[in-house]
Image 1 (spheres, rainbow, N blue to C red):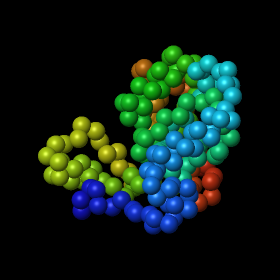
Image 2: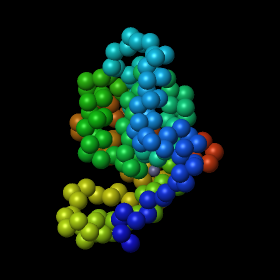
Image 3: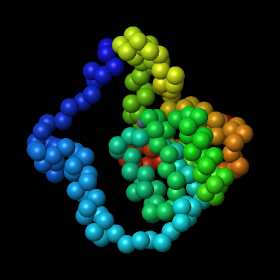
Length: 187
Ligand SMILES: [Zn+2]
């Protein structure tokens, strides 16, 4: 397989039904939406410190609406997202700044059912290298067992020497078909 061949395409009429004009790009649509957002926006007068002192690390999956799913409001939390919700060095960087500069104390990790990383393997890196002639420096962080992956992520947070607060770290799997979180026992 090639690494770029499996991008699903969407029918043109499905896209235009959601407001993308045939002449505009999806980014144009987002910029248009921002004009309407800003027109109704009032300065909430907040500083940058999250109100609930919590950082949420989650997969970038489009079916996971973190604020709605967790009852979060503007200003409540830091959200750190990437493919898989993996605790990479860069996530540790964000959590370190979140805790040491911006006062968060709790960490919530959210992976989910049907994650794209479950269908990949580290072979993805090899295929990339064959295609572009360069091996990526990063691991794919593919996994087979989502519960185990959440446990590993919790462990990475709990063992990071850079973090101030490592006692309140909890991990969950979000079910994309029911909207429910299932907590993972760290043991
Ligand atoms: Zn995912």
